[in-house]
Image (cartoon, rainbow, N blue to C red):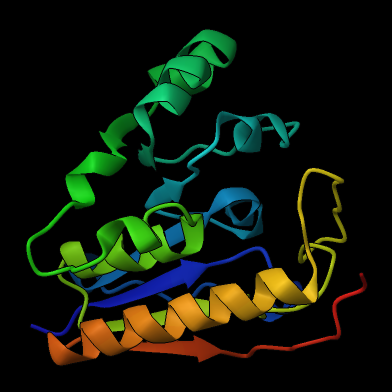
Length: 185
């Protein structure tokens, strides 16, 4: 079975993304943090509760993957949102096949890729994973988000490591329609 997962990251190029028609069980869409604002998704990966608070109107999504501490905070601070989603704890992603899992599990984008693999995706297409820029796809910026050359270099290195590990397991991970701009320091 060929299953494709679209990972929506909040980088500047996500503004170019448009949802494609789903063919049912063969298509999974996973939004990372504020990228859920770009369009409908089956899953939301938001490791920090403050990410939910960055959105004035939190779009409806069926499943949320986050850390347990963040989930407790989400239940307390955003009870209507929490009541409408099925929570899956990040610990569900610990697998024997992924060595150095803790290297990856601190980054929402990488967690979304691992989730896609766990859900059986053969092809994992990442939109808005630009590894550059200071603003999200919709122009949003926040002083809480460290967006400098060091962050983007480290995330690219981790993305490459994870992509290589998944390739050995038969998963293809690609970045689609990316734009890289120089990060301002």
